[in-house]
Image (cartoon, rainbow over all chains, first blue to last red; front, side, top):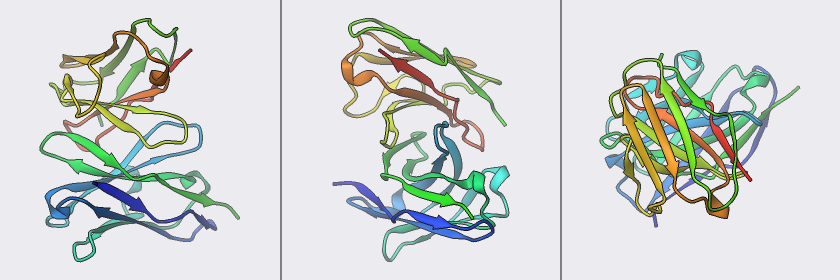
Length: 119
Length: 106
């Protein structure tokens, strides 16, 4: 079945970096993009950015520009999201989602990775 | 950036009742609107795309309508499992922004 399996919870100190992985299975990886969405505790959804698994093109939310990098490894069907210079307000659950850009939706989601930033 | 405003913030209803959720865009987004449902502790779930198309496996009691700047998600008769938070997202322009969500509670 189609699924996205994310890496485990992370606890980081302010100023550090985190890299979350998202391993896809059950579909042709390069036929879709991957979007990353985060959700701070008790808050709504925030779209972080998108990467094409076909050619690696990216588009990031402006507020994260310069701190976020999204990549893919087509040999392992895995997407990665790295966030640097972490702050306490980066504490959130981070989701990856399969993105069908032709049909304008994210139809398969990972279970989420909790990233906690605290000194 | 396109801002999506959802209303109401909270909708208190009983099972069997009709739910009407609104999403208003700050500019014309044609039909590039998607709806998601999220339950506590779970990832979001795709409901409706391109304003009015139900995703695979979504029950017919969920329907979406609208175009331009005003959109509606309707749940014709609430089932117990429909009590959740609903988000709209625009897909016209980067960044693909979300609304702040509407909580449908019992």
